[in-house]
Image 1: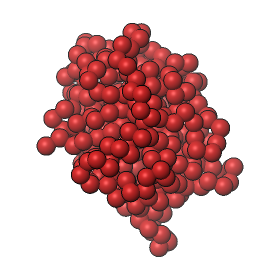
Image 2 (image 1 turned 30 degrees about the vertical axis):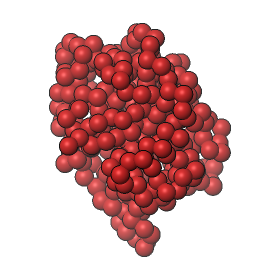
Image 3 (image 1 turned 60 degrees about the vertical axis):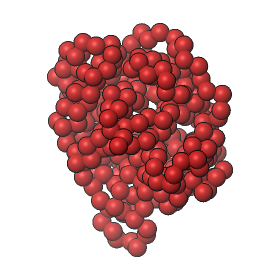
Image 4 (image 1 turned 90 degrees about the vertical axis):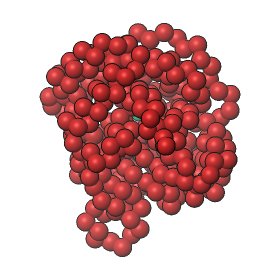
Length: 313
Ligand code: RIB
Ligand code: CA
């Protein structure tokens, strides 16, 4: 029985590879829809990119919705310096022909969760948490109906990437992240602690290119574009690969390890805005609201990713 998921995303090259990984795994994952959120770049580009990706994977049947065009309270911070002006620089993908759905993405999330049997839909969050927070605020009843929220975001042992204290997805909309952390739904977090271990080394990128199909070739072009900034920043053998870890967790959770602990979000200090304060050693009695993953098997992750990309058109 495949697991029903909604992917909330700001593609973004790494988001795109995550979506491809999900679409390459129909035995395990039933992708109900993709909902775009403002983050890496503006909402219009993110929604267009999501439509390009479903067509690249031969899955124009999957509806794409546009959600929120900016954070709940803050001014939108984007990352064109990493992802390019379009947010999906690298491959030359054709303009999408599949239409954007007319319903707002937040309303789609609410309506879908309220109509489905409780505990049957997982939310996969690959960008700022604005859409999910707004859905929880507009219809609090969805919190008890969500099977799990699996999100890429946060950092604790690895510190931040957009500021010394904060990871980008949380930093963009810390108030939204705070709403999500407090909502009571089961949450699994894939922070920079894990994604920084998943480095796209030249050998791994070469193996991706060697697959030879359109999807893997495009994924290779995406990652060889978006890696530029991080290779200079970190000086590592490969750039970290973030969002596909969310889908990999759903497919092979045994690739990752961590523990349940409290994760709280800094929303007031400008110095540490968006910091995910993880009580990993349980030094407080705060609610252990998050399955916080700290380590992952990089070889196993890339074996999975390359195997599944090879299954696509
Ligand atoms: O910090 C990494 C996260 O920010 C990833 O989701 C990437 O796509 C960007 O959105
Ligand atoms: Ca993302």
